[in-house]
Image 1 (tube, rainbow, N blue to C red):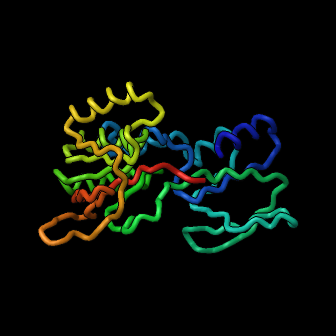
Image 2: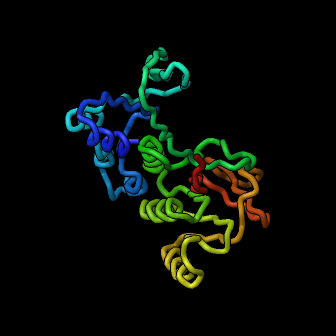
Length: 241
């Protein structure tokens, strides 16, 4: 969205360019989010590449955060916007409309997936929430579901914070973009750093702890019947538009 807005400004000095963002931030460093959780990035402001004020001063963009577009009225060429701070709604007209709402974390219909202390990592508030939990629960047990980029980075950073980490991956290997021979080296490195790696074993359910079980979040039940108590769960199974 911000790339489109700044490109539009370069094409026209006269255009009125308005950007609506549902969340509290625009132009943040997605790749830095796991490293804030792990403490390698210590200040959350370091995650912000640009602020609305910076974008206004540099590109003359009207950037409105916490503003959700709830309806597009195409025949009248306007959008209806809800101010999430006040709940009020208003209209904004347009000559051209660019849609770039991005994606949301994938949450398959696995029983119990919405239980407490289940986290995704998609934006700055997500990173802050996970870091706050980790800071208050030393030595907690973490289960990371998914062995892609985010899952592996989160496993590394949670391990760096001295959590007991398990990575669950439904496929026979993590990092599906790698050849199997290369992924085998990644598996060795993961295990050498004390992370429990469960491959070829999808999650069947997230359950309430049973008799003799203790978990702040869930007991993660795998397809083979294994039960992994977790104090926090990080869902890193990809995104959907």
